[in-house]
Image (tube, rainbow, N blue to C red; front, top):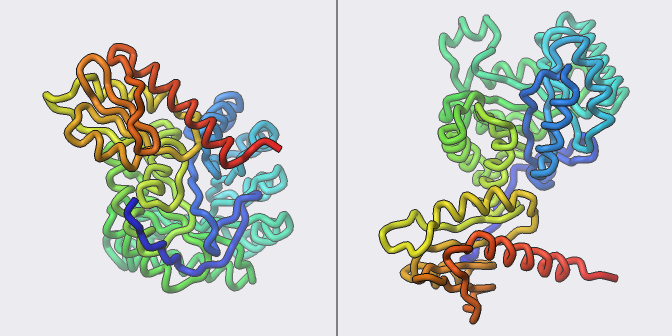
Length: 368
C-alpha cells in the first residue's frame, strides 16, 4: 500500500468524557445524538444500543425538561457509552443531569442565565469532574452578533466562541471542548481554523444541519476531511437528517478513508458496466448490511470483471473478480483455487469474510 505520512495533529489539552479521552493526540472519537423523545426511555436506550453496536464512542442526548433530566438517570443505568447531556437555558436541568451521572454537559454559558447561575453550573461540573462542551452554531448566534455581522461569518462564530470561553476562563475552568458549526462548509472550515489558533482545548468538528444521508455525508466529508488533514479536530459528529446510526457509519468511513482510524470493513467496489459477471451493486449493499457487526479492519474488493479486479485484489484482505458463472477469489493478494458460484456469491462471500475475521482476530490476540 502506498505510504502516507502521518498527520501532524494540532496540540491540545486532554479531557475525558466518561473514560473516553479527547485531545492531546488521543484517537479521534465518533459521536452521535439520539433523535428519540428522551422521556421515552425504552426507545432512547434502544437507539443508544444500536449506536454502541456500531462502535460509537460518545452519545449526546437532548434534555429540554426536568422530566427528561429524570430520564437520564434511568438511561445511564442501561447503557455503556458515555452520555453528553444537551442543555439550554435552564441551569437547574444542568445541575440535575450532572447529579444523575451525565459524562459531559453541552451548554453555552451565555444562555444559562446570570453570572451566579453560570458559576453554579461550572462549580457543579467541577464537583462531579465532568467537562463542558461549548457549542457555537451559525443558526443561533447572539442577537448583538447578528446585528453586528448581519450574516453568519467565521468572525462572528469566533467572537461568539471566545465570549463563552472567556466566561469559563474567569471561573478558572479549563476542562472543556468547543465546536463552531455552520451549515455552510466554507464558514465552518474557516471558523475552526481561526479558533484552533486561539485556544488549546480540544475541538469538536461538525457541519450543522448538513442534510440528508447523501448530501450531508458529502458536505461533512469535504469540510471535516480537510480540517483533519490539517491536523485540526479531536472528536466529530456527522449531523444527518437520518437515523443516528448513519452518522456513525459516515464518521468511521471518513476516518478510514484518511487512514486515521480503521474500523470494520472497507468495501472497494466497481461502479459496474456491461462487463460485470454478477450483480456487484446488490452484492455490496447486501454484504454491507449483513456485516455491520464486524469491527476488525479489513479491505474487501468486489469487482465485476477481470479488467481491474486482479489489480485491486493485490491490496485487499479478500477480493472477488467477476467471471462467467463462477468468479475468482483472492486472499491477501493471492489468487485461490476456490471459485465462487455467481448465483450464491453473497452467502459465500459472507462466510469467507467471517472466517477471515476470525483468523485475523486470532493472529492479533492468540489464545493463552
